[in-house]
Image 1: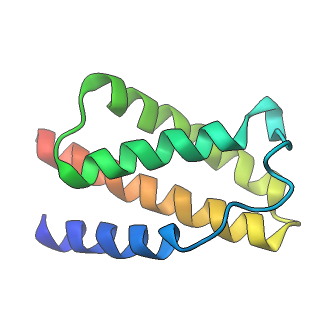
Image 2 (image 1 turned 60 degrees about the vertical axis):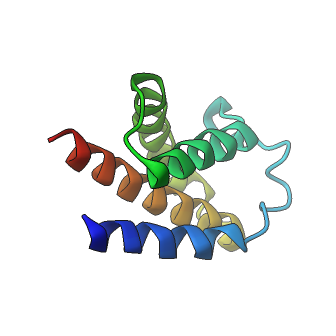
Length: 104
């Protein structure tokens, strides 16, 4: 578990220095507000770094991971946005893996 938490911490630190992609404050691929996507996942990741997620956050994390996974192919033409949201997606998936391991 310690190794996974270390990986999560590294990914999170890499993500935190990135700037939210220009143009995505108002862009809504597949009708999804990317600001809320970012905020929801960031909150869940931050919580997962501190301990086991409650049922509400766990549900949000898993649903947002699925939604973002479906959106990523739609934003590939914007390299900055693709890099930003891909790292967010990877970090969120690692947070979910850690949360799942805590429940086992």
